[in-house]
Image (cartoon, rainbow, N blue to C red):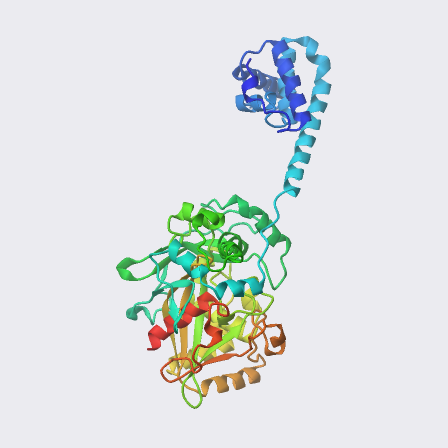
Length: 519
């Protein structure tokens, strides 16, 4: 028999694995076997004889020739069955080998233990997750031009949003006028019905960048109940444009998968720009992003190779007392996983199923339902609509949503679908909507009614409360409302709150699209 050409070199496998392979080869040579096919056939006979002896069903399959080859060439530690059956097959042809059986079985056990130790050593020696950049470093990068130059080079076919004269790192696909009153207009198909396991770094159809596995494990190890957990998401499958209208097909994913396979693209670009914030960073220097490009072709519209969680962002635009308008725009807290202390519109959050029984996925695949959930959870701190501890939820029965629906039915307020944005830093899409409140007294009445109901207006933990304003970076101040004049222009020209260094790109896109509708 020939063994040499496939035997691993010294050091590649534990020495105990090489030793058991050497013993098995000596058995086969002494017994006169010429091919692994002969060995496989002999082990089938061994197993059938053992089954006859035990008066059991005769189903002897023995071991395959590939299993025999792997064991005898030392490519992996053989199982106890493999060692035993090869040894017994050899004994039938060479009875003098009987005394060596016990020693061979013991050596096989040592080989398996050595291989397990080696695997554990490899796990402990894995690279650490990429180091996160500091908020101050991100702010510095976003105040310079390198990010814009890099994104325009990477995605020349997509225009960056210009919000009140400031370029933002995001592109948009505005809704058509005939779609404005249909919140579900952008939804295509939900392409699967299975959520990946909470600790599985994969989904049903996709392969993810192997270099992200360590970071994924780190997120699993740092889960924080009620703050950071690996919840289910609807993730981008593809964006298409039938008749010029954006349609998004989704697959089921997990939050940590999105952090590792999409948010990591943002962090990777920021790290590359920190030492040279005005320079172009080519794709060749961005391996995580390059993986997405290689798998998807155009990762802006194709989610292949990653799990890009879709989100829903709603601009609340209300008529202000005394004229003009206000946008609810608030800093995020220091407890969120991404964009700490950056300004964002509310309510906004991951597009996800709350009731996670498969028959309910299609019901959960609804912009209206997710918007109402976020409205209750983020503006009134109702944790149930984030955690989902109950088996069933009827969000439209909640008093806050019932009051909102009454305002919509009476014309006091209107809900619009305004379009889809794709953040080019993290390659994640967002469905954008607008809640336009025309009555300047509505907000005051709503606060009063909420107090009476026992569930007062109180923004959730994701948002920074005014009492924690001291946590904000130097020069940034806390405010709940951003004022616009009668023409929907900022009352304060060149307002710093709207600069990329202070505003989440998705908020910039949501405000831009809202202005496209109200104007």
